[in-house]
Image (cartoon, rainbow, N blue to C red; front, side, top):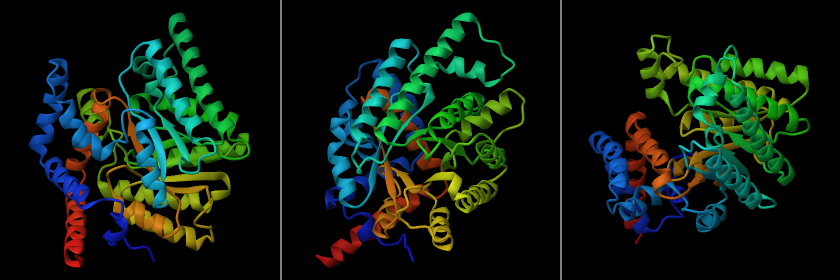
Length: 390
């Protein structure tokens, strides 16, 4: 039976100094006023060219990122794999708007795939479609009734070519790739693109995964529809299940534009749908590959029980657990020690350009009920254990 209370396993990779640093950081991100100030101040500080890069790099960047380049991540990759945890290299640069930037991002994603080829320490690659295409194009494409202009059709063709190049690289490298979920008003576009890639590359085994954000009330039904489509047209379904990362933004936009929010009415509904999705996928695992991307202990334990119930080998590559670097180590490392497939998202990129990602992580730790308190209590517990044993 897996226990997430074993802090000796959870933090074995951290020195006493690293433990204290993490504790201080979670104390700070647990202060909503400080996170709110940081969200406003940091972009301004970069615009004014204030010398804040060193401070960010030594604190929040160090906790949640692997480095500024792929090579910088080598130490993190080696540390994780030493403890049985894989790495998902995540080029977390956002906000590009021109073709040149999209091509650069596409090439960088392919570089992460090439890095992972024949390397069991890096079991997956990942990317956001907004890293290789203009947000406005995806938004217009979201509603199939919107007709694209000739210029937009050319833009779409370039997007499709980039996407196909990434998925083909993943297919050739035998490295499955996650297409991350994004805002609901561009997600239909992403879903259609993901299905097109699954139909092309998931004939025999799963290469391409789509991501379902279960804080949306329509995603469980979408999972059923996707499975049916795969059976009709002959492809296997890759699913990364997450609860979601854009809840506040989704609710604000729905309220502002006077439409029904896509978000679940409450956390319980989200948890129920997430766990129903886990059950459904495992019951139909012959047609699926699953990444259980959650920091939720209940859902993580549930999947271990489902694996046992259905007689699935914990090392079956069709079933993975994943968490973000710097968070929920008590889940990741205890699962890995228990013999399960586990990987950590390891974001990287220039400090200034990964700030949107880092600010979301800070936001997440203040808005998710109990997240910061749980991290702090576990770090405190491990520090006390070490002190007692000295």
